[in-house]
Image (cartoon, rainbow, N blue to C red; front, top):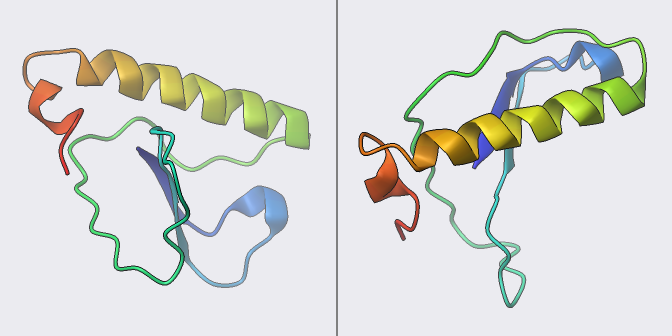
Length: 82
């Protein structure tokens, strides 16, 4: 999972939001279910982007950083945690 916590300046949000991106593909939807998240690291500060495409590219880079981190012994136990 990678997650944004903040105001998302690109979209000019007025309220702070928590936006997790679950990296696993699930067989079914789980809307309305309780979701518990564990934050084990920090990738970067919130930033504004000139285009939606540049924001999306940075989010995908964040995903690659998170996936590499989950391969490290320190974080590997969280990779398949349920």
